[in-house]
Image (cartoon, rainbow, N blue to C red; front, top):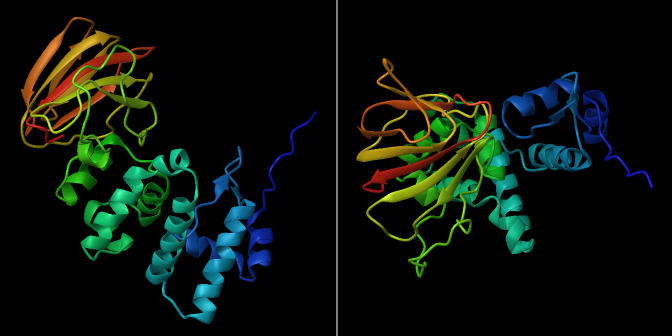
Length: 272
């Protein structure tokens, strides 16, 4: 039996269904109000859900006279209500995005303000808040630092009543915000160390340098890692190699192996 392919609309078709012009759709995309998919040739493709969102945007603009920032806030409120009504497993996939949105609201910031402050696009930030995906490791760290928290806390690491013993292969993992980067917890709770097992797919990288307080220790279990300190010190680490450095030094990294690279990575105090 052949599966039914979901309906996809081109720009002109989606604009006609939403009752606006194609140029308006492109404007809304630049404002982060809707992010359509792309075909293999790079053309915009709008799903049925996208078209429904476009109609809501048009209604908020025409009937309520809301500006883009206010429309986005209204849509986010609707998204949160919908996610709450869905099952817990599905809602849990966007925990980081919801936490970031809550921190932004608490700070009284719009998407545009945060995006400008961090040198990123509002559409990228909007996608992250809605899906918890689509940003580099560096960007996630910069956001955590911007809001006065840590990536570990954003990822829900500080839970109460956690086990002292974690068996091999039973590690709980962070939500995967960065493609190719899996972070597994080797110790949980309010500890004095962040103890993680990083699994990096081929080509996975931090995509930029970041820094924070504390000290950190890396031990390579498998694969090959390139780590750069202060933009001019290069370390090529192979299985069995270890590196200890001050976290306040700018550091970036990438998997140099054609397979997975697996690391033991410890930060102290838990400022990562």
